[in-house]
Amino acid sequence: MKLILLFAVLAALAFVAVTLKTRGSATPGRKATGDVRKRNPLTEREQAMYFRLTKTFPDTVVLAQVAMSALLDTNDRPTRSTFDRKVCDFVLCSKAFHVLAIVELDDSTHRNKEARDERRDAILGKAGYRTLRFKQVPDAADLRAAVDGATFTALS
Image (cartoon, rainbow, N blue to C red; front, top):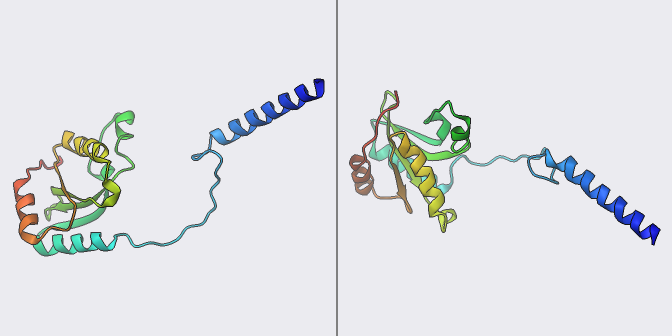
């Protein structure tokens, strides 16, 4: 009986030691492999949207995969953590780099995640931006109407 109790105590201590050791890592129990691979910065759908934007708005600058931290600023660390690892699909800018539109191309990964998208849009909205969301690449007329109908404030 004492032997069983001793093994149980040792097993519990081993479990606690492993838990404490992995607690500091980004993904508990997983270690970085160092393996990386290349990928295209834009999917085929995103490439189609990029070229639609550049063709529809030739006098603007179209930026792709823009970190929200490039568009938003705060001195409050908890607030920063709500956006600092998020990325906007496209940002349409004037030649002076004033934001004219933020464009998101929603694919199947956005299904049942409308609340998450609304939170992202609300963060951008606090700074005066409105996000334009499309499920498919719109034709030029629909894209122009959506962008022309949006009002944005330039960042100071």
